[in-house]
Length: 460
Image (cartoon, rainbow, N blue to C red):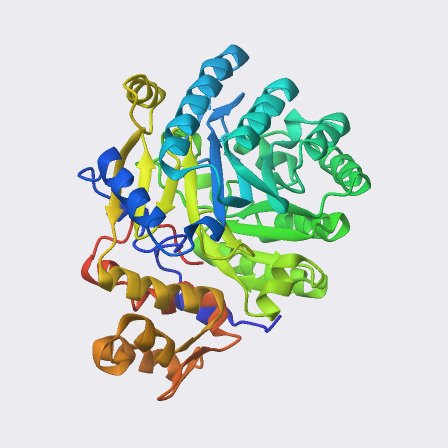
């Protein structure tokens, strides 16, 4: 990986979207409801060759047994495992409502279970959920089936069960191996437990194993995080997701348990990031983009080399650009030129399903401008380059005229060596990859018009 200066990281340590979608979810409106989603589905099915277009499915399992103080996910903390039964029945109802409209003939090439903690469910419940999905959707042989795993809730036998169900990609939530940091965020999991699970997962034969890390947590220091990085190098997962902790206690109540004085300052966070980039490079990882790293042999690294990288609500992906069905409380979906999000509370989610309605409470129908800008932003975020002609042909516009103001702003980035700009297009440089979110933000008309960016996580 190309080295990057601390000055550059510091300059771009500002809030900004992660661009798992464009427009971003904060732009969704409550005027978009089930009827609008039904219209989007009808229009999509009327399109050419829709039957062969792949489909992605995301299932949100909100339950967790214990609260992690840093968490900003939509979750329900409970030790009552009987709460999952009515939730699974509700999921079955939601799936039935979807298949009535979307059909059962489109191949599903990506399935992802997230949360919360999907492994809150018992083996029997996970089996029932997967069987339910297989009955209702055409899960393609060899497709990607991934699940997020809380290491505290699984053992080797459970990993074997997940493999038998068809899961071929797993992600372990580690965050930090230091006991003091784990205590400060209320997530105790010994490193030895993770190493044993990794050994078991490799023997079972999962195609790709990811580990999540977070820097900027309470009681972390650059030196303590170095020890976590050294253990990660020993663990050698196929992929690493390195996230910056965003302390937003006004938005996320669990973060109010964190003592602000325990948080590392901005300079220390930048130091941790710089040392992480160096450690991953020394260990042989490829920088995919933003916060994703992978071994050269991993499918994600191969996709980047071949220009096949994509981005969806789960982050960087090898999955081609396609429709996404989001199932479960708070889940987000994408059908054609629309986004939709389900109710965020169980009570409202259950109530809408009992009314025989899809539990959509907000969303967005994208305009022509939204679609053109989405194409630009995703090209920059995924390929690191943009050919003006491709946008001109797809959206019947003169790129340099339509985006004249944006191209003028990019001149400053070119002077900094972050990109190369000519009459044919834009090429992000190796240094520019580290701040590609900032480059993409130039084309985000909502962000450029909105001075209140504190709602986003920081780029660095």
